[in-house]
Length: 398
Ligand code: GLA
Image (cartoon, rainbow, N blue to C red; front, top):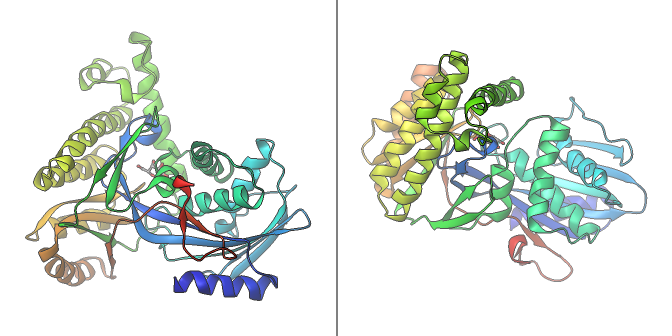
C-alpha cells in the first residue's frame, strides 16, 4: 500500500492533479510449460506478489505522457505518431498498447501515466507483460471502453508481438490478468480454457535471479519459433491436420527426423515432451505429489538446456546447487531463458539452508552474486479508484 500511496503522490507532483485510477498488474513465475505457449500448448504459471503500478489520468489533448519512477525517466509522444523507441525501451510497452488499441479502432484520449513497480527487469519474471497489462487496463478504464477480459489479454500480447517485436505467446499476459492467490493456473494456450489448481503453502517457491541479462533475447526467441515452425511444416506434409507442435506425438516427430534440421528436431522434441510434462505436473500438483512435480521440473530444465538451448552456465549452476540441497523437490529456469531466473520448489524447512548454499556457492563459481526472492502467489491485475476507495478490485471479477 505504501508503494501505491507514493505513486499517487508522485503523480500529483508531476502532473499537478489527482490520478483517475491506479492499476496494479503482477509478475509471474512459470512452474512448468516453457516455450509451449506459442506452440499452442499447455502452461502452468503462478502470479506472484511483485507488481507494476500505474497511476493514470486523462488529458484534454492527444498526447501520451509517461514517467517511470524506478528508472527516473520521462517521455511524451503524440498518440498519432507512436514509434518504437530503442533509447527508452520501457516506454514501448504502454505505447505499444495505445498503438494496438488505435489499430483496432478505439479513439483514445490523451493520458498521463506515472509508472513504478518492484518486479526486477529482465529477470524472466515478466515485468514487460505486467506493464502491458496494466497499460491496457488503464486505457480501458480512462476511456470507458468496457473491453472484455480476454480481449484485454490479447491486446496486451499484441503490443509485445506487433509493436515491441517479440513473437511471444499468451502466457504472461494471461496470468498477469487472471492470476489467483494460492493457485497455479493451468492454461490451454489454444482454446484458452483454464483451471485454477491450489498451491498449498506447505511448499514454497524460491526464485533465484542469476543477475545475467541477455541483449539478444528478442532475436534468439523469435528464432526458436521459426525452428518449431520448420518441424510443423514438414509434419503437415504427412499429417495435414497438424496445426502446431501441440498436435504432434514423439512417434510422429521421429518419422520426419531425416527431413528436418537437427536443430529443428531438438526444438520440437522439447515442446512435444514439455506439453506432456505439464499434463503430468497438473496431476502431481492436484495429488500433492511434490516429489513428482519436482522431478518433472528438473526434466523440463534438462530439456530446455539440451534441446531448446536457452540455458546459460549461470542458470545451470543455480539448478545444480539447489538440487544438491536437502528439502528441494525440484528446480528449473523460468521464463524465456538466456539469463534470468531459476524457480525452486522447496519445503519451508529447507529455505534457510538453500539460501545459505546459493549465497556461498554461486558467487564463488561465477564471480558475482545472485538475488533470492521468496515468492508468494498473488492475485491477477486489480484497480483502485482513489475517489471511491483505496481497496483494490480484481479486474477479472469486475
Ligand atoms: C516469455 C514469453 C512467453 C513464453 C515464455 C517461455 O516469457 O513472453 O510467452 O513464451 O517466454 O515459455
